[in-house]
Amino acid sequence: MKPFEIKSKSCLLIFDWHQDVNWVKSILEKEKGNYDYIIWGGDEFDSFKSYPEVETAKNSAKFVVEIIEGKYGPSSLILGNHTCSYYEAHKYSSKFQSPRHLYHTCSGFTKSKSVEISKVLKLQHWQQFHLFYVCNGFFISHAG
Image 1 (spheres, helix red, strand yellow):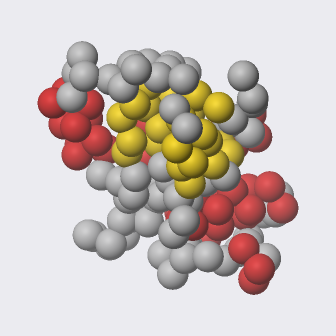
Image 2 (cartoon, rainbow, N blue to C red; image 1 turned 180 degrees about the vertical axis):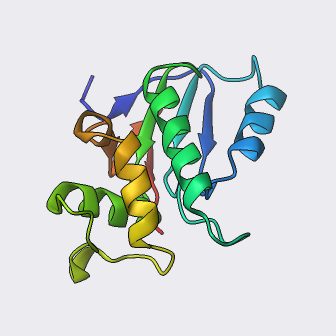
């Protein structure tokens, strides 16, 4: 099997949850027993429901750590456009500055959220994200 190939009887795809951890948990509860693998399709951050979003960004980062630790079962994470800016800010700035203009791929990015997310997500967590997966012959990417 290739590194980004996933074999699954029934794969649950969760995309664009934008800090709405409660919504994701309700989906997981509703679909319990109906899947054996989860692909998290990106955009965990940058809710547009409320302001400020710093605390919910931090909670979303903690939820991502739970995903990586396997709390919700076998999973893979895809980088979304709202995820990339925080990854780049973490990777290239020890002072949590704005990502390089090339990687500023979303309007919701703020330095304050970047600081809080970077307190939770360390390099070993970011290394779990990829640009795409192939699941049962289907190419899956964020494409945001």
